Image (cartoon, rainbow, N blue to C red):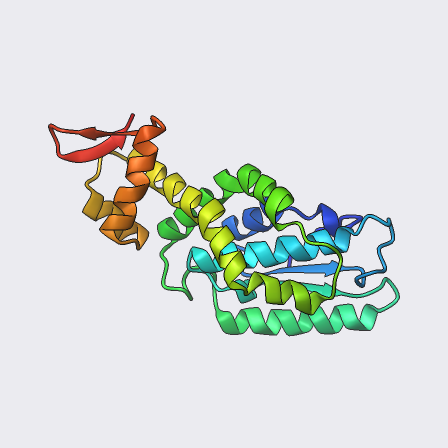
Length: 218
């Protein structure tokens, strides 16, 4: 097991989480102060809770089990809770199996998906701060919001579409491809890929190669 110690859970970033998964870590456990008991009076633990819920949404979106990430709240004097939490999480992760392999993804496909998210993290941070930053409230309310139709709409509009474009650009870096092949490799419908290609074309990211009847990077 690898442990990384930081002073405040609010400093744990999406980049840290996805870098760990990219390096083959099967699960990420985050320990935080009890809600409403922040040592630094910054509500960093609430920011960490938002980040974890968003990261779980991203993991699920790219086909990975969101249970590979968890956050537990405890004080510095509750070593028993830390031990119980870590042991329980390790047991759960072992039951899930190796990352990617357990989800039916080969190593190349796993890295492709994780890299697409990682490239988008600066943008996702902005979305989180402007659209998803929630006020301090009970943990159950956070879970309810991140399971709501409102969050799904916001996620699809602001993040899912950008992630699809990021993946399309990554595929085209390997060489020109027809729409049907991209749809197959991304697990999207041809009409969804066509919509993203249309937007990407207007942004000057991709172009249609008439000679080869396929799309390429602009």
